[in-house]
View (cartoon, rainbow, N blue to C red):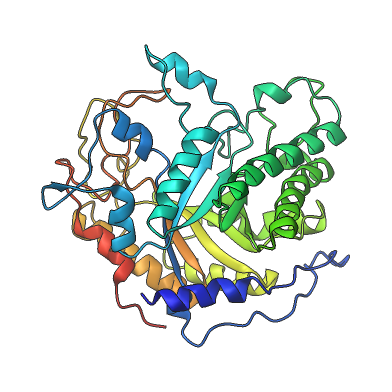
Length: 402
């Protein structure tokens, strides 16, 4: 992959003009035509979420290439990755409850800062994923940060989101570590901060029709990013992110028209083929093209994965791979690699701009999370059960066709 052309890709993205308010016929406002580089395959970004790496290494996990230990960030850089995705929790103090000794608050700011330094040290770009929660945020879990639970005003909450987002990015900017991409929320199908919320907390679930309030919160985060851009003369790509491609059309239509959220660059979605079955693997490219053209924005897969085995490497039950494999892609190293090659090729032809694999380095170790010790993802990584890099990672350097 030509790194110069990758830089061209981000330069082109930086001049996109964000659409204005939407028309009343429920169609997004027109934006200037997207200028594509001559070779769309060269503008396709490969990324990996390495959020767990620090914790894994602190608890005995290692990464090997042909039996020799190697820094995982170096591995991904050398194998063709362009960007590292990192989740950020507001205050994950519950991590202290998992261990008997004082440890870093994994996926809290200091830990994420360390990860960004590691990524930038290898010349990798960064996608910083603000969860706006103290713990995992996903379609069914969008818990309010403990520090904000007493808020009862949407204006106060919006200010809190703005100030928090601004401070995080300002602190990174002062160290020369600004991310190239920022996600405002993670898998926000029904919005943010609506589960386990106190009764007086502002109502934010868009699945209950609270589009106006949700829009204020999303825009607060976006406005903070843009304020940092203005201060430091940068152009950070802003991504919004839902799970399951079936949610792309309605969610982004309503987020623009009903919530008034228009200042974003990337339409992001999670695609796990064994869970997200409404849109078939074969029909996904047509949907990607349709959504890209309708909203006139870049579109990326921000999370995906596939199993290389249905076996388990430790006592922590795996959460993926117990289903039946999809046609043509057995749960094997070759099947995993071919799935990623074909998915990437389909996305390139459909006009998508990138793909990011979720936690390909979550190997077995003595790390703990809320549900177990080890890895519930060891059968979906790019490392075999002996900790050696597999050939799957080579999909990022495959000779894709336009």
